[in-house]
Length: 208
Image 1 (cartoon, rainbow, N blue to C red):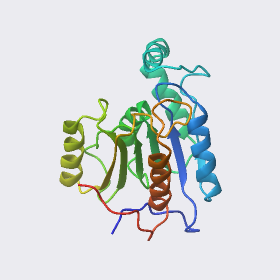
Image 2 (cartoon, one colour):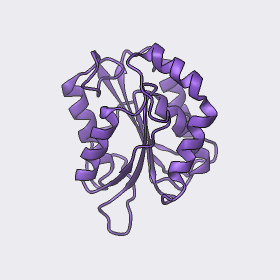
Image 3 (spheres, helix red, strand yellow):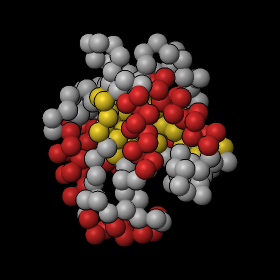
Image 4 (cartoon, rainbow, N blue to C red):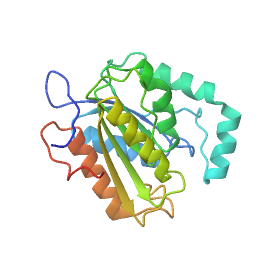
């Protein structure tokens, strides 16, 4: 059976923190948040770059260098301060690195959602934590050894991991504003994400 998060007492809503990519907080994250809200979930999209955005990955890394990783993770922590311990941690590309840093501090999370890049599974992870990774294939930012390492850590630490790869898609395939966009892969990704947030729903299977 596919992994799914354990929701709140009403059984219909998850709290989700969605951390943006190295391009900054852009329409792709805001539109994703709106789609999740329409499904009944509560979503925050912290602006980790203080309002700045980039149009290319190189510009994004330069922006990250200016802002600094410590400031990025501090802003993420501030955004989570008043959210439930069970809040789902979700990251888009660079945002999965934010998830990596915050996950050891948020082991009660109901689930972890990784878009376009993997994260590291902390030693302190709660056994049974559901995790989904969605990534293009091939993708220079998601090399096979990083996915193998994620699988290995998930098995060792009893994490309920699903990995979905999207052949032929670009790295940022969910972003309609970029050349990487793949509408079919993006739609399938968000259907699977919504299933992940709905206990008892089938997501279409686990990709080994």
